[in-house]
Image (cartoon, rainbow, N blue to C red; front, side, top):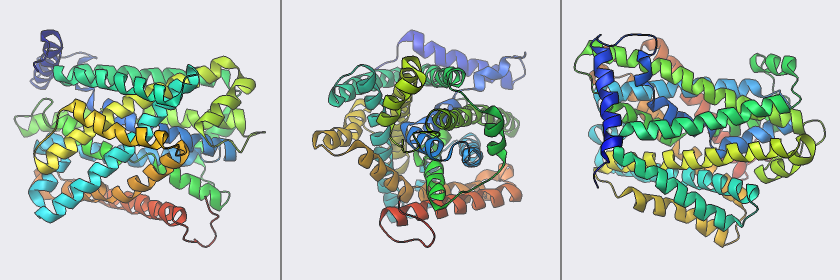
Length: 436
């Protein structure tokens, strides 16, 4: 299908504005806005329904204590998303394509299969989250909520035919809606700001269960599909013609990553703060989205509960759209072909319908999806660290040794924590830690 003239011209005008800014012909305080978009889209992965569940559990059980974990997870995410964006800008290739170019075919095929499974597992959690929000808000069966979510996400995906800019604006609007919802929640909830501020910067780990919840927070933050996607969003948006332009693009990209993921981090902190303010004192057992909604109504009022659901719906729909985009990019990058976006949308949402139709508990399905993500996470993280540190691939834009050391450390920390989560979920005893 051909793109509509209006949506096509929107992307064309953005590309022209980027080229003019790079050439120095476009100046002013808002000239940098044309570079915004890729990190905004990637940031939605850090505000998906999986984050809702872990943040609610953290706030309800431990109050403000684990806010510093949210900050740490967000800083790790900033580093990896910045490296992914830089990779796309400098090489003109996305992470999956570079893996196909540089690794043996059997390795590439295994990486592709693992990454595709991870993308589908991600979509399961995101799709179910949006459907649960609709079902609760409008008092409808979950299957009906899933059908509506499917139609809405497919409709949004069709805007991708018009180029990159319409999708950036749509996802950006949904990110803004999520942020607005939690800003409202902060005015409704009785927050102890002094205690919240203290625990953002003062590390504390009360017990083994808190450690496991912290693992869940980090596991729900660094997402495999977002690492793949960001490099693809930057590779052809406005290709640089020389190193000076690449340097400028990288500089604007780094700024956008910091701003977009700072917003995502604040939203995650707001989730913990809201759960702490509402549930910690007398409802510390709250750990599921449905329970949180039903408990919020008598505690903070109908408005707070409904705003919570609106943010969940926006999160589920937008993250499901982005997850489908990532899956398409992963397939095209690893094996060189793609399928129509509506076919991928239908295929990736089938597991969610099967789960609900068979009567499987939605929360258990979300746990299983997180296990799959934990298994898949080493693939993009290790590949990204390797490529970013390769002078042959990155040239003068190779990551500084200090950045590489931090990236390797972050990778080891995330993978070790994911291993703890996997061992616990599979029933392997860990000394000093209680079961989940």
